[in-house]
Image 1 (cartoon, rainbow, N blue to C red):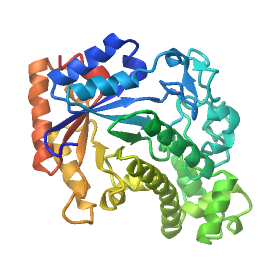
Image 2: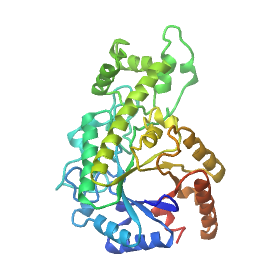
Image 3: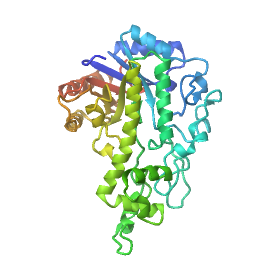
Image 4: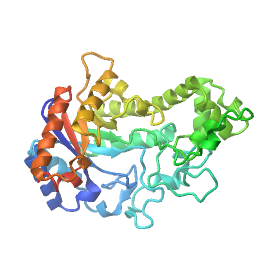
Length: 397
């Protein structure tokens, strides 16, 4: 990959590619717009693959035609690298193939939700993401996307097998990881009275902060592994799961051990895919959350260490929704968390989202794009990546 002048784009195959003509249109658009790196996604939060996989469920629409070989070949002829984009922990809807969702082929493996529901995240009062999130007794709404629990060895094996299959199947330039993290969402509601200190129940405020939030994963196998590997005494801290989780979250040092332990499991998977990629002469990259150290906590994505340790060949922080001033501040802040000199140890490609160009005509949008690119390069990035082709093709023609 060129280390200067990079302009990359994320592209969802399921949404954009249904015929060879779509491939031609995409590659020509990339050529017109100076794109040198393409991230075509094989499973963008739909729970199945856009090729006849033997490792994961298949989308019925692609059972007879796999567009990836032509995407790679046509892109390469145009001087465009292909790094296959894989959604990792996000396994798509909890009920793939049902209620109007994309049809899943029954010729391939069944969805993991059907055969390994134990691989999915469980919230703080023991409810699986396959069931919902409510903690107050109200009817539960199933989440739009169900996340695999990266602390479970079986889930990590499953995802590593998918990446290995992709690398063995295609002569692409690399593999690009997304959703390589835990899910997280803040509490949907809080009641001030509940947060008042109660001497009879000093952990009440902690439980209130947890209520309605998406924090994972509190299934028993994960907690047993955490307790055994850290010796923290989790199961001796209270009579039930809710009191034990409140105990864990009530002390900063205990909570950091939990965050660090979860992050180690995510990093273990990255390290494993990196080993497989290197053995095959492929590059490994990842789309990561822009906000660090925040994303090293519940999300457990401690990606600056991946850069310092060169577990990635390049990284694409998702610096979404920022105007040029805050964008520059964010990029500078990211470099401040790196430890290995010279910084960065691997190229950075700053991710921007098409929402930043709403209401602009093409000329104004290109002027703003040039500002983002100049800012990124001035601050040590190798270029930018646009999310995504779906939105960009109507603006940058």
